[in-house]
Amino acid sequence: MSTADTDSLLEHVLLAFAVEPSHDKATLERYLSRYPQYATDLVDLLSELRLSSEGIVHTTDDESAAQKAWDAFTATPPRAERPRLVENPFTLFQGPSFVALATELRIRRSILIALRDRIVIATSIPKPFLKRLAIATRSTTEALLEYLDQPTTVAPGASYKSDGKPEAPAKIEFERLLINSGVTSEEKDDIFMSST
Image (tube, rainbow, N blue to C red):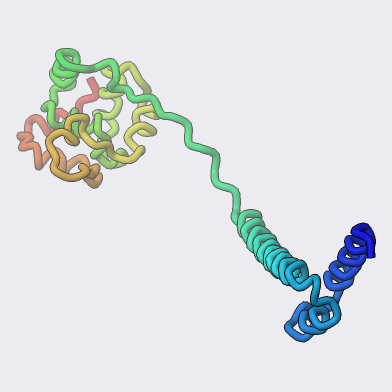
């Protein structure tokens, strides 16, 4: 038998083995008994067939996992639009101008810092004071309320003073802030009543 005939027969045997419905031990033994000269080629082909069939199973698993993920994604309701950035009305007031703003508003700097860091619950601020704050910061009451409704912030230097990661404080009522700041009753009356 010539080399071409041997190669043709090998190709024919391997093709016949590949299209067998089952590639179990019995099938392999049957081919090995008929074609012992192709034992290495048959074992190699069996290994390749098992690897490729495992790959098909994984592909199917991957496809079903992808389909499940897609179904979960499409079932999720769309998120609200990304909130737009709210302008900080206190950005113009730093250092001496921040102190001057506190003086103009007739409040302690600790109160102004709490407002800047959004520690105060916006709806608890009295309207006359909110109006006075808006005028002093060259803003509107609506813009101020929108800014104050944002989550609290961590003081800029807090991370340098902290052993761990600093956390933003919880929001408090405006009146609680005044009490904590030691505001006198006269100062309190001015804050609650005066809009100028």
